[in-house]
Image 1 (cartoon, helix red, strand yellow):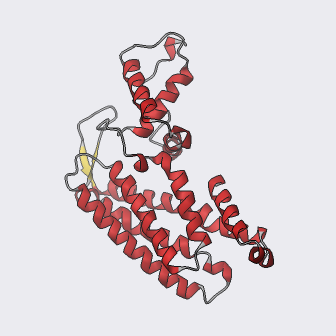
Image 2: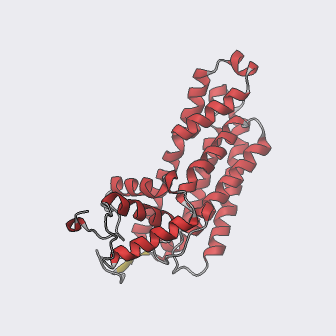
Image 3: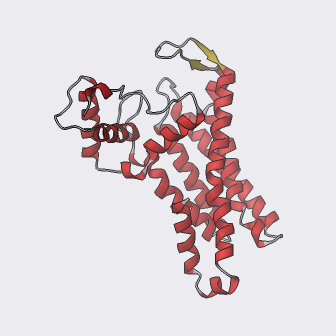
Amino acid sequence: MNYNEKFDIDKPLWDQSTYIGRVKHYFFISEFNTVVSEKKLWEAKKFCDDYKMGKIPPGTDMSDIIRAKQLRDSAFHLETGELLPMLGRLSYQLPVSVILTTAMLTFQKSTAVMVASQMINHMHNAIINYTYRIPRVSDDKNQMRNAFLCAVLASTIMTVTCKKLLYQRTHSYSRCVPFCGVAIGHVVNLPIVRYKDIALGMPLFLKDEKTPLMKSKVAALKGTTECIISRILMSLPCLLLVPVLTQKIMTPCFSQRQPWLLAFIETSLCAFL
């Protein structure tokens, strides 16, 4: 490799001051190919630590360095350096989201399954929020628990209410029930998780500085709002587009004769999107 290409392995590969740069970094650390054995994760972390000290094995290519960085960034906490819980890593969002989304869409006529799916979905969100928590906050567990309970309660009420209202209309409207529950859950969950930052202000840092310059409530509110919008938009393709596509693909007669195909098609579309 060309040693002149050496870069700061602790920094993201894309400019984090732009939304596109943050999206690229998110996809970089959440790719499903980062699901590897714990041994390989620790090897990647050691490789990155050695790289920072200038210990580069002969024959190392830039792609090897990028791969090690991807594995380390996806599995270890940015500030504490601890190995993240398996289900809390972003790389597990794809399989978990596909399973939950398919359950919500396929069994949407069952209120019990819908409520259970919403509960598991927000439980998974709570695990992710706790996994990527900010270490400086002392009462994270209580805050995460309250956020989870409120999100489950809100999404359950929204799901049951929308089901009663929308099922009186056309079938197309009734397919929007899962999306309504997920959306309201995000709207309730995130502000509670970020409550302290919104109320007291989140620390702002100058570039390459470790000491906070000031605290800003506006920045906390702006960040929380953008996060809510992003999460809702991310759920749009699977929870709204997939039902429309399956309705076009499968005629009512065909879906009644082969009902198992509905779950297969929706699972495939969710994984693709």
